[in-house]
Every structure is written in structure tokens, then in C-alpha cells.
Length: 385
Image 1 (cartoon, rainbow, N blue to C red):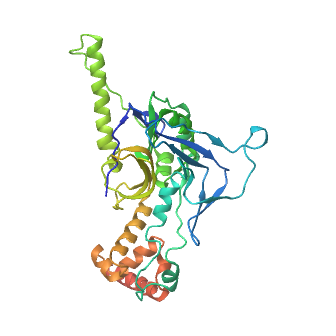
Image 2 (image 1 turned 180 degrees about the horizontal axis):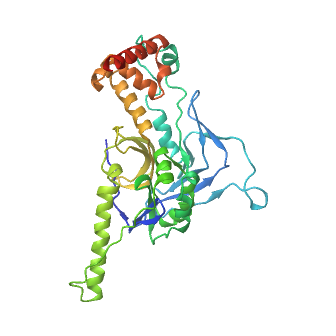
Image 3 (image 1 turned 135 degrees about the horizontal axis):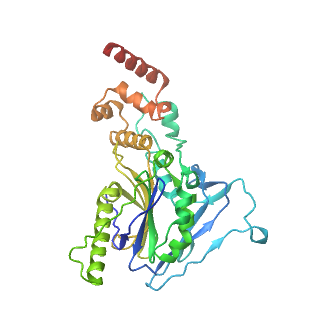
């Protein structure tokens, strides 16, 4: 378990557009030996080969290519774009095939599919299904596990106000990241090594994927208030005094933001999985503790040898997605034994069966077992009345 280390990244005062709040992340010392650039793909779906029998299908508009140096010298970001005839958009392609989520292109370049690396990690959570052939599980569950796993997300263009907010957003000097809020709920965090990388990748945020909760908050939220500060004139005798007071306000805002607004991401331990080494850097993805009724974010990072973040991209799970992760994790901890898992959760087996059906996992149980659980649940409700 680990927490995200944003050392070197400082939050600046937020900017508000309707129900969207944008919080800049600035690096005083940009990283020069790791650079990111974008590969733009077609606007259609992409199919990723994960293994001989496993595939991942999603809307994949772009990939990121990380370039690094082994001796700490500056690395260059080489832009790549697929253009059609005359420099226009590429012709429509119904399906684009990708080999692996992460693929090395050269000795010092690595292509990965941003955010999909994290989403695939969530979809693969205990994907194999029951590890012991308990009698309650269906033949389908024992043979194929959780295949197929399906989750919903919204492209940024569907999040109300996000496109306009990103278009009018003021990019700060040395800005290397951004935190996006809708209805003052943290939607996603994005950070890159260098300001030039951020300026190039800033437009890509509108084609990223966002969670169901974020979409609804943006749709229903009233215009957000701006956090304005006032400097007490007492004690201000010079420009130096005024500058010092302004800096104190900036520090107070950063402290409030990092401990209160973003605490659900920054203060919660996550389970990290290393995916690839890039010289002194490591590409990883992480999963949350799946605590119901709390913020839960999945994501991916590139960290240096000290664990500090060079690259970050996150996705906030909906309450239903958290519930599914919670149930799968508890089942896996108890070797998929329904009686033991129900006892740990403080419910009956029938209630646990109903929770599995409500979460979309009813097909994993044998039909006669699920029917029995339904009868028990109905009978229990009848007696309560």
C-alpha cells in the first residue's frame, strides 16, 4: 500500500467555469530526462491484445509515448500524428488493433495507452473467478471467470462544461498538471514531467474517459463559487509586505486544497502494481481500497527512484463500481466461500447473493441457488412487514 507523493508539484488557485473547477499543478523544477508526447489514433474503438485469449475493447483516441535518457541528460519529445491526405484527419477506421497496453518502441521509448492501463487493471480484478469449485457457483463462473467484464465511462466531450473550461483555461508558467472537479467532486488528476508536455497534451483531456458520478455532477451542479481571498491591510507597509501576504494566501489555499478537497485521492493508501521500468523511472497502476461511500480512484503513475510522481492520470469510480470492487475483493480474500464472506460482511448468504445480483454478478451463481436466495429474501421482507 502506498500514497501518492506530489512532492515538487504545487497547486495554484482554482479557476471556475460553470460547474467545473480546474486546479493547476505547477513544477518549480521540471523534469528534463523524461518526456511525454501523444500518438493520435482514429476516433473509433480500439481492440488491445492482452494475451492469447484476453482482449480489451474501448474508445482509445490516443496513446502516450514516454522518452527518457539513462544518464539524466535532457530527453526530446518527438510528436507523432496520423494524418490523412492533404494533412487532414485520417480516414475513418472501424477498429484499430493494439498490441499490448504497454509496448516498447525503442531502447529509450515506451508506448502506453493512458488511463486504459488503469481501467484494464480494474476490469482484471480477480478476473479468474472462483478458485475453488464451491457448489454455489455456476459452471460458467468456474470455466470462464468474470469474462466478459464491462464498465461504463463518459468521454470528456460529454461532460457538461469541461470542453469550454479547458478552452478558456489560463495555463500558468511551469504548469505540469491539472485537477478537474465537477460539482466540487474530484473527477481526475493529470500530471506530466515538463511544461512543454503539458501544453501539448492539455487538449487531450477533453477526449479522456470520466466516471458516471462526474458526468452527473457536471450535468446537475449549479455554478460553483470561486474561492476568493482578501488580504487584511493592517501591517502592509510596502510592496514586500504585500507580496509576502499574497504568498501566505497561496500557501493557505494549497494546504486547504491538498488536505480537504483532494484528500480522498492524496491521503488514501492505494495498492500499486509495477508495470515497466524506464531507466530511473517506473510505470505503475494502482487500485483503491474499495471503501463503500468514500472516494475511490484508480490510476497510473510514472515515479522516480524516490517515489515522486513524474506522470499521473486518475479515474474516479462510481459507487456501483466501488461496490463491485468491494464484493470481489472480499470474496477473493475468503477463497470465494459465500458463507465465510457473508459472515465477514455481517449479512446472510441470501443477502450476499442479492448483493451479487444487484452488482451485476448474478450470472456467477447457479440458477437454483440464486432462486433460493430470492425466495429467502422475499420471505424475510414479508416477515418484517
